[in-house]
Image 1 (cartoon, rainbow, N blue to C red):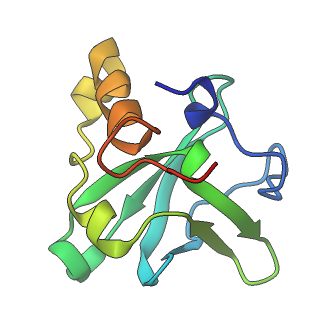
Image 2 (cartoon, rainbow, N blue to C red):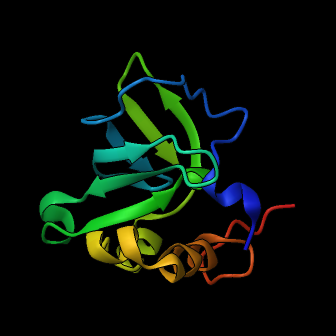
Image 3 (spheres, rainbow, N blue to C red):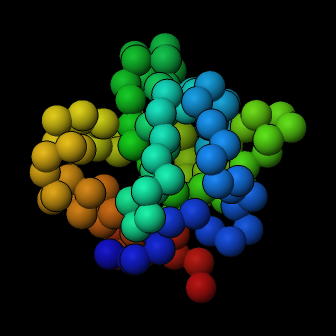
Length: 122
């Protein structure tokens, strides 16, 4: 698992302390929902996206390393995964998120370079 999967990229435009809740989330091929919650915790940064009716109210957790950029003017978060990749992601599980260290590893593997939907760019 890539260590930077859980950190915001230098070019993401992330402003420390900014509240992303309510920002629209754009996959590489279209809108997927809105940010429900987020974390800036070092080594464990992420956003939780409420997909709404698009995939029947499913919430997904996206590691901060999937974020390409944040546009504060438009209140949008752009992620480097497709709608299909996000749709197939493990569903956000609050209990596992809080109490199961293997959950973050599972998500990091899913989205990381070695996973099926990792960022395979050099």
